[in-house]
Length: 232
Ligand SMILES: O=C(O)CCC(=O)C(=O)O
Ligand SMILES: [Fe+2]
Image (cartoon, rainbow, N blue to C red; front, side, top):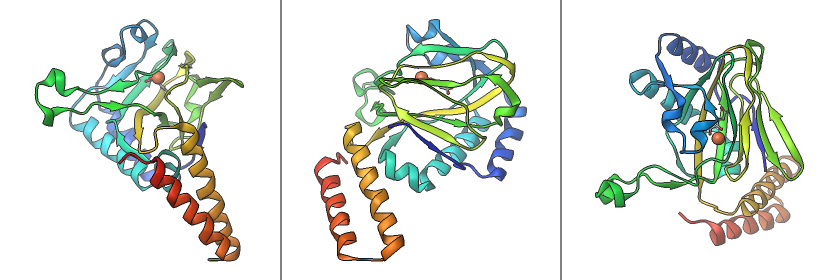
């Protein structure tokens, strides 16, 4: 399931981020790409530091408070977001994201130091207006074809990390995004989609008819499937 969610960030938060990024330094994005993705990754990323921490915590706070994100992703772990900037001529060729991200205790030698996670979902949160640039569509491939996404500032696209995807070259202006990955409590994408649809249906039933016996039954099914599938 590919899901677009509007207004993750408020206008004030977008304004704060835009101002912070004007004064910030960016470094070559190849530093955080896997060995083969380095060949096709042409962008820059916000340098680690105080500004990056401020922007990251705004983005993480916005994701945590969003009900649709919670209902569809069941996040267990969210990676610290990368803030990426694409200038004219930059893009990111076809790739699949790494299945595992972070440090394994095996390499750090300290079991407290591990932040290793499985990436179940990838997301791009758009930080500036699509009018600010030409090109720069995020294109996600699935069995139905290649789907381009270029959303309003503050909106995001959430998609399975299992997909091949790319960012088309920017031909005018600057594209600014926050990108991150989620390990879900519900590992299987089909199970997650089923839970999301049941939850959506029961909310709609509740809005239309209140707390009926049918609502109670669907709520019970939803809760018990989550119990069956969740890996807390
Ligand atoms: O910039 C984007 O929308 C996605 C970038 C991407 O695919 C990645 O960082 O792995
Ligand atoms: Fe990617």
